[in-house]
Amino acid sequence: DAKTTQPNSMESNEEEPVHLPCNHSTISGTDYIHWYRQLPSQGPEYVIHGLTSNVNNRMASLAIAEDRKSSTLILHRATLRDAAVYYCILRRRIIGANQFYFGTGTSLTVIP
Amino acid sequence: DTGVSQNPRHKITKRGQNVTFRCDPISEHNRLYWYRQTLGQGPEFLTYFQNEAQLEKSRLLSDRFSAERPKGSFSTLEIQRTEQGDSAMYLCASQLYSGNRQPQHFGDGTRLSIL
Image (cartoon, rainbow over all chains, first blue to last red; front, top):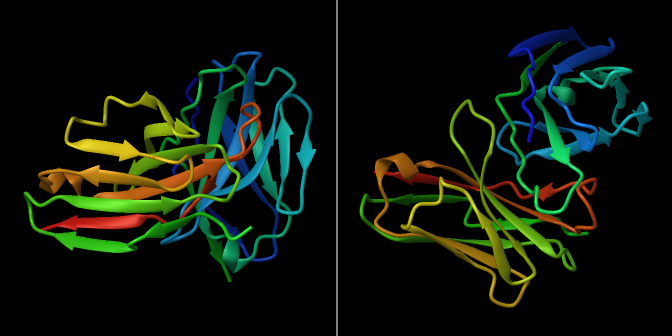
């Protein structure tokens, strides 16, 4: 799977929007962009994924650049429970490419 | 959906002992994955099963490690002759696979500490 680059850490004030960036300049046309987050002492939790178009769900929004070389996870209103490590991952849309490469992610701190 | 269950949550053992962890996936999920996570790092892929067949193993999975999924439901991960470097969180995930757009659902892991 192609590599992703994320900032090591970010801070946000509670109830403010948060934009978490991810660069994936070597993305291929068949790669899905997945985001997971990991709260302390828990396993990773699926947040959202997309291929080309922007995506929204109850947890977050995913904005994908037109050239797909970067994406941004948007938390519309950060809460203290959103403090976690956020991982941006690419998954090949082909049979046999089954590993997730998590990297070190972005540690999000939410300030009350 | 009762989620992915892992047992035990914590395991402390002496170096050289064997340990076994169990993972119960979400029912009807055909894929099951094992990962290892050390402090400050993201999870690292170890191996995965499709039903009962082990289809892929990482280079991280040394010959001291063995995983099984005998009936295509629960899975076990055994580490023989444990070493200090085996201390980590061992995570299990399951997936109803029909292409890589389906998310993986993770358990909360088994934390292994080697004395």
